[in-house]
Length: 246
Image 1 (tube, rainbow, N blue to C red):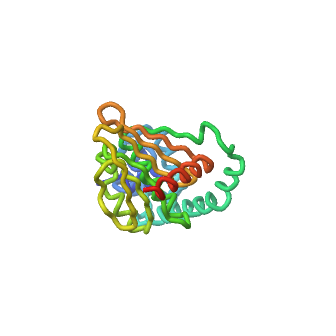
Image 2: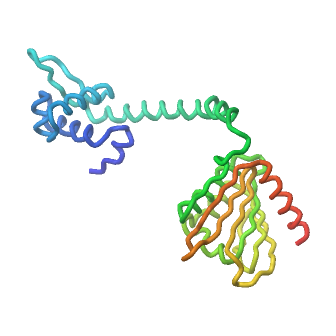
Image 3: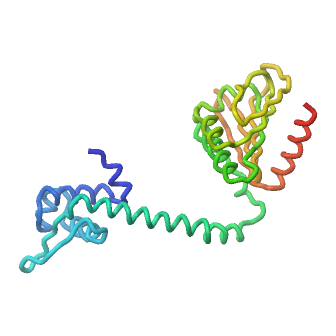
């Protein structure tokens, strides 16, 4: 049985274990649930209270004791719906209130505006950040300067990047240093000559950010993202000037 979906509902492994034990037992005492699940009685009681609070377990008195029983598994769907509604509300509050308020207190430029990443995960983060940032920009476009040496490694962690960019209608202008580069929809490309031994580099300008990728030893990617409207604007001017000259 795959348990990831239950974990996504906010149930931890102990809660899942005890809930399933209770399903097998039917109405049962804490002692019986603890024995069936292999969890000590104190932890079993605390977990049952949490499950009751989540609406997937109930209890009733039998003499001087409490007897617990599991709700029908269909109740898990309602737990998921409540969690989804709470997440949707939290996301809306983030967009409309929390993030704008936090941005007002953010320093114009600080070391926090510069982020470093490594490896293929860092490259994938940049590529996804480009898609997400430019998709919400009225211009829906960005600019790139890349060398042939780097292009061979760029899309390794995110092979369907170009397809996703095209599906969102995001424009890109590329100054390619060295021959090569595939033609694609919503893409313009110009070339600069370079030797095959040119250093590997990739610069993406998507205001207010500039991302730079290079390769260390053994083709290991190193990534820097600068979040600064001033720096991005300057880089954009330099790119546009060079673009007009090519």
